[in-house]
Length: 228
Length: 84
Image 1 (cartoon, each protein chain N blue to C red):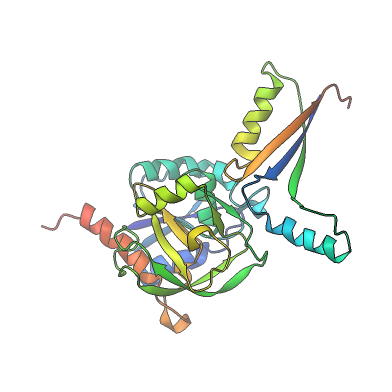
Image 2: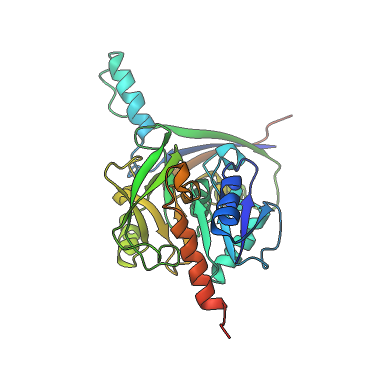
């Protein structure tokens, strides 16, 4: 399976993402610069964390109009897996690929530590290798992860099983319903504030993030590879 | 040239953690009459007149980029004929 790691000016988790795919997952990955106009040769799209365009105006608001984002929208419409982590999540929200918006963390602090995440929905293409209600350890590093949406949207998210992950124990940022990650209604776009790509090797603290990437590959194999 | 002054503020229904912190600080300075503080953004956009009505252009810019209407409201005023 071949992944595109989209690189915006100000992305800073692109190398971690590339390493996770290439060295830990053992799949193909390529960096794709933000002004590229074609993603048709990739099977999965990864939007890494960072501070694209210096977080000017609002996090993700400028990156969302990058050339490559038209292609990301197209890939999402085609049903390809699209994962946005941290700033990548913020970009997906600004682009309207996911509902809602991000606010400053409730305590106004940049939070950088490992948190417990509860797997709320283990039936998505991103979470099928986890058990429902399993608690995994994944690092967070953000100042604007306070997820917000209106009541109608929140109810829809709950009813459709679009809430993939919630914070277990203390909510680090004040997000609505302890939300840490959500999918679109179709289930092929996931945005999450925690960094699964930083939790792919137990030597470095946790390998709990690896199953997220393995779930994506498994889903892709099941639907694309015909065994002879 | 036309100058447009745009204010972007958080919607009333959205908690403003920065505003709350500033309110506490004002209270600490003994301004107990302060009831609420909301922090927003102020933008000045200078533009050339075009065939399109200025309101239409400014609203479109606000909706598409300058404000995120999920969490923010915007207001603007148009100042005509700014000489260079």
